[in-house]
Image (tube, rainbow, N blue to C red):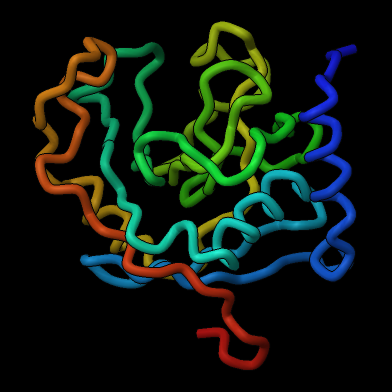
Length: 207
């Protein structure tokens, strides 16, 4: 069984205690970018830790003014097996909150299908502000798959329900900005796509 630090455990308990969201199956948010609108449905029932972490970033305005800054495709991927995703967040990983506990796809049942929204991370239990959207199904990112050496995969917490054309347009932007990381070479957008705002979609105003 994986051990959790006191900080991680307290974050887990505080996020799980957000009963108003946890009692719902899902919460929809609308992301407005330079290239258009993306609607995302967060599954707070299946992935309460990751979804509620994203919601508190949204509700606090911490995602406004961030960007999509990295795109990965078979043409520029430096990992194996190759994937297709767009990555967003503040780029630094700095967060007003502690990192969250990892929710595997084995535990949630939420897989990296086309339009899956998932937490980016380094080590297990380090996800905070960075996330990515799958362009096409990416089973290599699921639990026990080969993309991540630790075998834990990444944490899906929702799916795009509108605006995948915008996500795909972001994926096609020029991506050869300089980087000091050989792993990221060819993946950093020359002009990051600004996330102008992310807001909850009020019940009754769903598209």
